[in-house]
Amino acid sequence: MTDSPSPLMELSDLLRAWRVIAGTKLGRDKPLPQTEVAERMGVSERWYRSLESGGPVSLTPEVLSRLSEALMLGPDERMALYGQIFGDAPMNPWATADLSALTSLIEAQSLPAYLTDHAWNIQGHNSAMAAWFPWVLEPGANLMRWALTTREAREQYVDWPLHAEVYLALLRFALVSRPESVELSVLLDEVLQDKEVREAWDRQPHIVAYRQGHHFRLSLPHISAEELVLESMVLIPAYHQDIRCVLLVRREDPEAPAAG
Image (cartoon, rainbow, N blue to C red; front, side, top):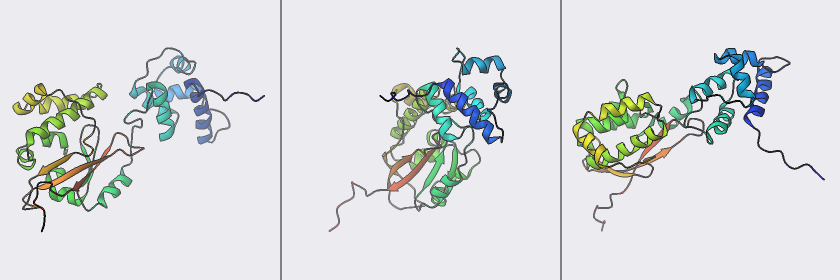
């Protein structure tokens, strides 16, 4: 009779295994000591011993980030760590992200494409995006701020009030998902300084996670004499889950008369 399959590893099992791997990465013939892990994290050895033994310690995303750095965890290991604590991988379990591959991907697109972080700061864009929306070239360019507070957005988005409600629904989802984010709170305070935006915020308490598949119209005279019908395609990269990769795909105008 064979033994039954082992249960999923507990956090203590993972931490001990990762200390062994960390020691190997450092060219040692023994695991990384608990004392050194604690030093790398900036916590007491007693705190780390309690963590590894399953004791009651407070674990925030910031603490897990320091733990991940101390144990030199890769992206898959970090996702497993966050999954153990929060029940699922969070938006960004790694502190730094190399976006060069994603940047190359969007630069290869012929239609507008861009990258934003969790607070809609522009992290990358292609030449078509810059041609259509020159504001992305400005220092600190932020999609949410531009869409909700500028006259340019009101002129370019056909039925801007409807778009404002969608953007606010996206912002509300982000705030619910990341209640600890100071950057999102500051962004909300800033956009709500606009009277129309404030009225829309108070009027429609909707929540939208992503603008995936959203069809909308743009008026961009410098690009087309006719209104453009676009669809947002939102991609979440596997190892950069705090990044949105958005492609704007042109669609046929459903209201245009049939040819012939």
